[in-house]
Image (cartoon, rainbow, N blue to C red):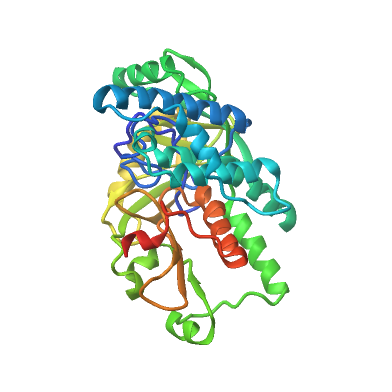
Length: 392
């Protein structure tokens, strides 16, 4: 893995990979929230105050706008936050106010196709503002299903070299890292309000609930046959979407990620260590370390090379004695513009998709699912920034 310093990586519970990237708003439009070089695993990150988050975005927009205006000339950045608020999309009755406001703003931020938003990072804005929506969704799901899936954590982000230390100091001086950074020192910094989503627990409980209610069929499915028999079929097939003939025109990219499960004692149970790779403590004296990022690798077979890479990283993350017990592999699917896809296929009647979430699956899934709900229930359009129609 060659993880750039702007990424605060947060690890996975299984071979599915997703996380938030909360640092470096300057590069997020190009490095982006999904599949840039670093391997980001299965979790999401939550921050306490949406107001503080919006203030942080306003600072980023203002700073980037000043740079943009100075370099190219252009419009007044002070108009962007107001315009974004005015372009909000309703979440629907009954939703928590913070979640509704979050979706309105995140949708507005990714929909506004202005140069200033691009400079500040539309994907960064969507990432930051989608977090409270994800937190609300997973806490609600856990309560409904009777399982705990949201685990509060902190991240200790250690500097790997002087370049990272300088990068952090520059962004801190511009106040772009608030409210993410709790404290910092010469060796690194702390990110508060992080969380891990226990996907195995969530999926197991949901599967059992749907089975009991008679709403789940577990069998091989032929999308063509389903499309003939139903008004709409939405494909949520993960990396398999790249092989679907209806979406062959979408420029998918695949990146394989591998992680290790190991036995290790003495780790702080609520602290994720991030230093190029990441170390996530689990229950019962276990932990995970990850993850590799092999662009173009299209198989699920664990490799010796990945294990060697991860074992070389472990001493940089902990001095504790450890023993590797398992190795996992998963695939991330993303696109050149670093955004997922959602919406109806323009080349096939009655077929929709939600895919390409890359390293942001856990974070973006509630937001994209809400778009489908609003589309079906209210006829609302999909966010143009993530609509699959952008590829024709």
